[in-house]
Image (cartoon, rainbow, N blue to C red):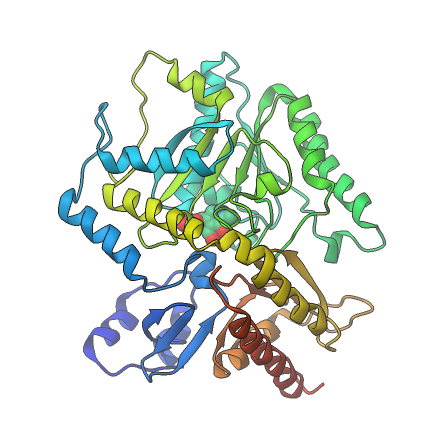
Length: 455
Ligand SMILES: Cc1ncc(COP(=O)(O)O)c(C=O)c1O
């Protein structure tokens, strides 16, 4: 903990309601860390100590921190056209280049795009597009959205409602709107005594059961992350996605894939949907689209919807001041160029993921580790009080936070999730040596945690 002394930091601690923080604790004991600089895959704190960031910020800094090439591209855009709205049939070269670049890397069936500034806004936009589409198609009863338990889709009223984490609902009167949540393909809990394939079918069947319960005429869409990261790093069994896709098609329910985390290289492909060979109607993008050098998110529409929007003769009443901001557009284009030029998809497939998974599989035999799971550059370490019975630690013990603290003291930033899970979502530029240094620190942190909790 760092209790700052300078007046600006004191003002921050006193008056800034920090997101997803125990603000009262922070007021008493100070910040958990105070980072003054970041470069490459490292964050550097106010004491000059360097940390390998195995979280890539919030699974978003795909190309690494502090890049001069990004700064130059954004600086050029700022000096040339610091703002221009894309409202009222207006455009500019930054917007045009953005569309051309996105078209180069998205699957062919994504024909149209809308822009926003956060994953939450993009998910809100996706839900509005579901409503717009079914109203336009003369099926106004198709409004219900099916989401999943443990889903994370963001924090605004609609995205927070789609999110399937109870603390996100309590005290906010959420979920709001016709939204329900079905089981997640969460093997650690829902897969006990069931093989992977059976779990995949069972979880997909839960989607169909909910459609049948509500009546397909009332269901507009099913929304899901290809891999649930915030909810516990839940990578579904390999048969799950094809089964879900078939169910959505059968009942004419739109499929929204929230690729805010999985998009832009995390699975060694531009999008997880191509990895799983699934064609969604709506693709939600954020985070890695710009590696968060500028807040940008997007919604990609399948031709099926895009052409209906394009053919509509009326005004399209949706958009934000900052939709397709020129500086953000320049950031996205440069970010994609960097991923291409530096071969980062190949790096994930051939270097980063194999190294990380070799180390993680070795960690699975640690007495505190129940299993390791995930795919590509998304990994979860499930801690457990008992490997045989899959017992959870008492929630108040926050065992994952103890490991996070020790890893941090050893120069490595990892994320602790509820349910005794540690998450790793490194920058896609992370090298073999850096992965090995981080893995050493995590192993040491697991040993120190054992000692601390008296095992
Ligand atoms: C899958 C997914 N969707 C949406 C969001 C929300 O994005 P934002 O925090 O930019 O609103 C997140 C954020 O972590 C996410 O993981």
